[in-house]
Length: 82
Image (cartoon, rainbow, N blue to C red; front, side):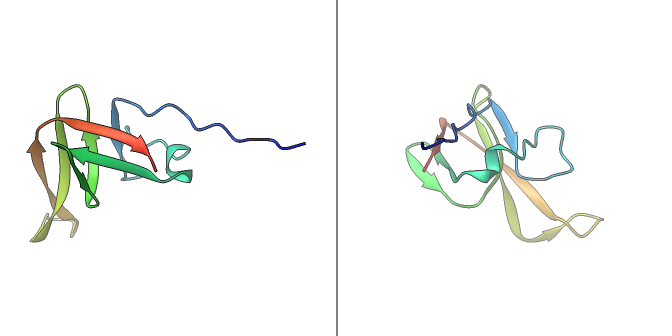
């Protein structure tokens, strides 16, 4: 009697930051992958499929709260479960 845990559908807009209103904890129980313009990215903090952008953390710059600044990259975004 196997109970398979179904994966929730990936939303249009998702954020990895727990303080964001677009953060959905149930999604992060599974491994999620993001492709931007056909290339898989491993550093995505937030994405929006309909608007065609992802946000990645800046390597050095910090905001006034000490969090990395997010840089918006535009293109074709695909989200998938690994």
